Image 1 (tube, rainbow, N blue to C red):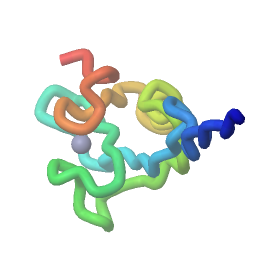
Image 2 (tube, rainbow, N blue to C red):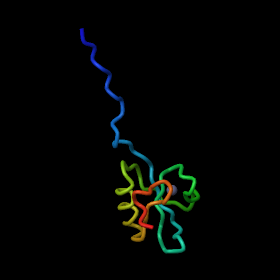
Image 3 (cartoon, rainbow, N blue to C red):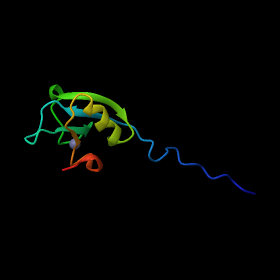
Image 4 (cartoon, protein in one colour):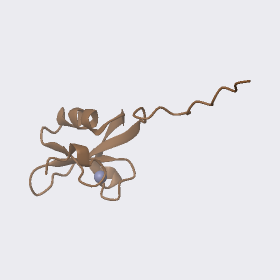
Length: 83
Ligand SMILES: [Zn+2]
């Protein structure tokens, strides 16, 4: 008698996270994009909400509409950090 295995409740790669971009540019002119809760993120009044994103790539793309120099945070979004 076979018992169906329980499926994993969450789909990997489908996890949404809240992103925001720092309104203040870095010394190199970049506007860093962070996940909510990042220790290296901007102060609440210095950040622009980007919405919920499944990946940093779309969050950075969203940020670039406002700041063409947007770049992923080295710490929370390394896949989108271009150095
Ligand atoms: Zn960050």
